[in-house]
Length: 276
Image (tube, rainbow, N blue to C red):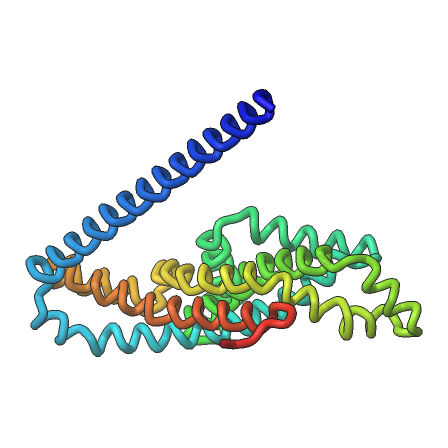
């Protein structure tokens, strides 16, 4: 009995020590989060009260609005094209044909292994070089080049997300579909791909947010996007903080609704989940 009582007392003491440790960690996290939030709030207050020229802010809003609409247009087109192309890349990565699988793998390795900036230069400067000087058929080439570059780059990442989603589907799903008389293509379309899309949704959503931020690189190929407007305002007005505020608002106006949309579809895609 004495031994049993001693063991129970020791177990209770260990549990109490564990709870005390957990409580300390909890409060440490609360303190750190509070200090961080206070510091960020104070920094934002100082910037908005001491460093932002609100007369200039109102004056440059139309220029940022034009850039915002252009970035939104480029993002929407590139997003749709990259997702569609990513499905084919992902299917190629899991293809039973070695040649198809090798081509898809080479595509992914190139576009993931080289910088997006390098790819944009190849498309923007390299493709027109195939024509004699002054004879390139597309006059305003910077926006089409931007869409092509973003699409090709992010199709590689979307393809890898789709590949991971397909590989996460149990093999028994395909076997069951084939045993019911479905062809391989029908089984992929009706059984495997819906589950793969659900499994890859988080990675695909994250890649789309990155796509939005990658539009900031388009300034190097003369696309009048948000960062380009910021540089112009800063160079003429010698004011960095005022346009920086509009840059942050412009990007967050795209990424925050996009993140919320992705989370909505994630909830809808959960087994037995609802959209509440």
